[in-house]
Length: 379
View 1 (cartoon, helix red, strand yellow):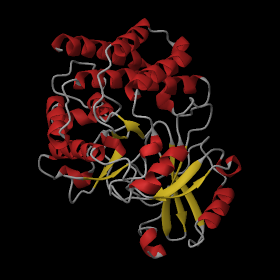
View 2 (view 1 turned 120 degrees about the horizontal axis):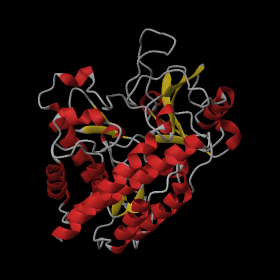
View 3 (view 1 turned 90 degrees about the vertical axis):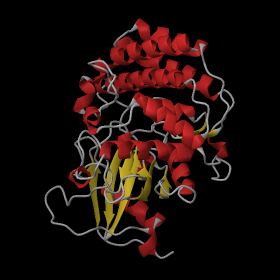
C-alpha cells in the first residue's frame, strides 16, 4: 500500500477563517474551541516520528459535534487525519479510553469496512495532555437534527437511514471477536451484571449534584431482573444515528461508525437497547427524551417495534426481552447526562449545553421505570 492509498488527501475548497467545508464527522471543522487547544508543535513532532511518510505544514481544526471525546481535523500537507483525545478535566474511571479505541480500530477495519482505520497511538501526556490516536478521515454525511441537503431529495429517506443503522450494528454483532483479534477486549461472563453495577457506581459519584431516589430504585430493579445472556459478540456501546456516516449516493448502507472507545465483548443486545434508547417513535408521549437529536422525529424513521424485528431477522438472536435492554440504556444515559453536568459544575467542561443537560435525568429515569413495568408485566 502506497502512502497515497493509506492516507486520504484533502479536497479543494475556498478557504475561510474556519477552513473549507469538511464533511465527515457531522459538522464543519472550525477553529479549536477555547479550552480545547493542543500544542501543535508537539503534536507535529509525534506525527513525524510515528508516520514519517507524511510531510508538509500542519493545521489543526476541531469538529464541534459530540458531547464527550474531542475530535480534531489534523492536516499534514495534503493529508487529512482525525485526532481523537478525551475531554479535558477530571474523568470518570475507565471512561474515554483512547487506548481501547485505538486497539479496536487498528484491527477491526480489516474485517468490518464501516470501521475507520487507526494509524498511531500516543500515551505521552506531554504531547497533547492525554492519550490520543490518529485515524483515517472518512467523508460523508452525519445526520443530526436536520437532514443534510445532499439527502433531502432521496425518497423515503428516514426509513432508509433507520434500517441502514440497524443493519450496521446487527452486522457488527455477527462478527467473531476472535477472528477480529479482539476477544480479549472483555469478559463475556457476567457482562450485563457488571454493566449494571458499574453504572450504579458512576451514578453514586455524581448523584449529590441532584439526588433522585428514582435513579437508585431503577438501578435496583435492573439488578434484580437481568436477562440471561446467550450470545457473545463485539459491543460498540454507543450506537446511534450521529455516530454513523452515510454516502448521499447510497444511503441504504452505513459507510462509517465512530466512537469506539467503549467497545467490549459481551451481550450484543446491549447495543440494541441503546439503539432503542435514542430512537424517537410516533407513540412517544410529549416530552419524551430520545437523545439530543430531536429533529429525528420528523424524518419518518421506522418504529421501535420495527427496529427490534429488523435486528432479530438479521441476526437470528432472541430479542424477547428487548424492553429490559432499552430500560437499562435509558437509565445508563441518565447517568451519562449527570456526569456531563457534573463536569460542567466542576469547571471541567466549557460546553454550554452541559449547563442545563441535567434536566433530562428525571425524564430518562421515569421512562426507564415505565419500560421495566411494561417489560416485566409482559414477561
